[in-house]
Each structure stands twice: as C-alpha cells, then as structure tokens.
Image (cartoon, rainbow, N blue to C red; front, side, top):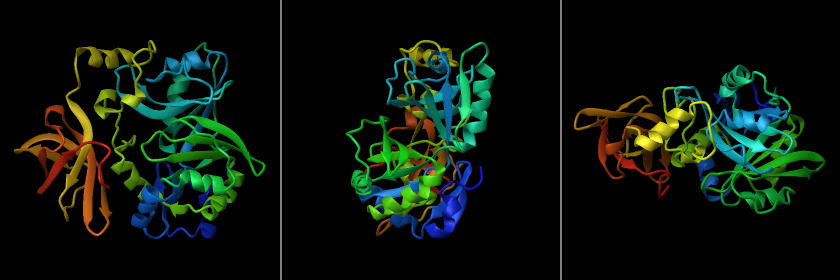
Length: 352
C-alpha cells in the first residue's frame, strides 16, 4: 500500500520513525514506545489505523453469500453491529481473518492490508451466479483508533457525542461536516475506531490530541496486542493453523449453517479438542527470545513462540505468545525456550 493517509502528514506528526506494519507504512513510535504503551493502559492513546483495508459488499445475495464464506454468523447480524470471523479453505485451514459489519443495505469487511489481496481473490473465486458486488474502498476510507480508560473522554472533548455502544457496535455521526463511523472495540480495554475520508484524517488526529489523547505508534500497538493475548494473522495465525487451535471462540458460530471449511470445524468440535492451543508465556528478566523459538518440556519439543514483547516499568518483564501441546498448556506450568525458563500464562496477561 505504501504510506497511510495519516502518514502523508508525517512532518506535521513529528513521528520519530516509520515502518511497514500490516502491509502499510506508518509511524513506529513517537519517541518512547513504553510511554505510549502506558497511555494505552492508563490514559488514552490515539493511533493510525490506515493499515486496515475496507471492502464493501452489496447486492441481494450479499448476506447469504458471506454467511457461507466465513466462520461467524452474518445471517442474523443486526444493522449497526459487527462480528469477528475467519475465512477458511475447504480443509479448514485459516486463509485470513476479518471483521464484518452490517450497514443495512451493504456489508463492510475490515481486514489488514497485508491480507486484502488474498481475501479479494478468494471472494472473487467463490462468487459464481450470486448477486454480490465486491468493491475495495480502501482508498476512500481510513481510520484512527483510540484505546485506554479515558478514550471516551477524549472523543467527547474532540466533539463526538456517542451513545453507550456495545462491543463491535457502531454509530454513524457527522463531525464538523465529516461523515464518520465510530465503532466500539471488542477487547477488554476500552477502545474505539473512527472511520472517515482520508482528506479529514489529520483534522481528526489534531482534535483527538487536543482532547487529551497521546500519539501512539505501531511498536506500542504490538505491546498492547500481545499483552491482550490477541493473535495477529501472518504472525500468530498461519494458513496451516486450524480455528480451534487459536483459542478464538469469538470467531466461531456453530448454529449458523454451512460455510467453506465448516465440516472440519464441526468435526473437531464433535470429536474432541485439537492437540495444540494458543497461549501466553512469561520469561525471567534478561532473557532473549525470538519468534520461532521452540518450546520444550524436559527436552521434548511441544510448541513454538510466535510473538514476543518486553515491558519496562521499573523492571523488565518479557512475555510471548505461541502454541503448545494442549496437555502442557496449563497456566503455571514451567517450560524451556532455548536456555531460558518460562511459565505458561493464561490470556490476557494479568498484572501488566
């Protein structure tokens, strides 16, 4: 994709560094990733969501068709609400993940830019005689995110009058003459996403900063993602993985009817659990762990690390996400990663 709409204003933002993140170029940090992470946990952080692609589905068959494509229930999705879902191949392996929102006369699909080409190609492959039109809106819409206990205060200080939204519920608003879509996040921390035209993103960024939000880059977002225990497609979720291995029950609905890969998902549910599970690991101070490191118990390989982060708040605390054999993935169990000792942790991580 190149630069996000917000990053086009890089000189005005004062970002220290930029990097490719989820398929787009955005700010890595505004100076101190640890302080930015702290804002997300105790105050309010505002961040670029220009790495998220937007896809519109219209046509009379759109609901039935998408319901037959993804793992969650689109058929009964009320207007103004959204769900998180996986897109699978016929063997039940994960091709991608996405959020789908009902806008009444259309569906809006939200995914990372790094996935959008594969998702569009998969959609195109399965639309045969269906009345469904797929349109990539990514250059017409961008978004900013807010996270932290003071997020709603920052929104209101910036001039937004929002109701008490439920997780993945959205509200369309007119803000200073700009049409915006405000979505409540579905994580444990309070978060919002504000979708709007790219031409107005800098105006909104400045208003949220003036409302008390602190600027946050991709490095702090990764810290927040990892401590929240949220897997990222292409990093923690790969095409070889099965839905139940990821522990993302929020992506699955077992009462919605048939969809691509459903037979495998249902077989796993009816015959018992998968052998691996996605979970967290806490390491001792000073250990150096990298994604791809193998997890051992008494010398036997039982899993691998997929994401790592380090928090510094008086002392260093290193945490990781990864997969481990289900029988060994019990919180409190000691494991080895290289020459480092670690303890299995439930997700999200506690006492962060």
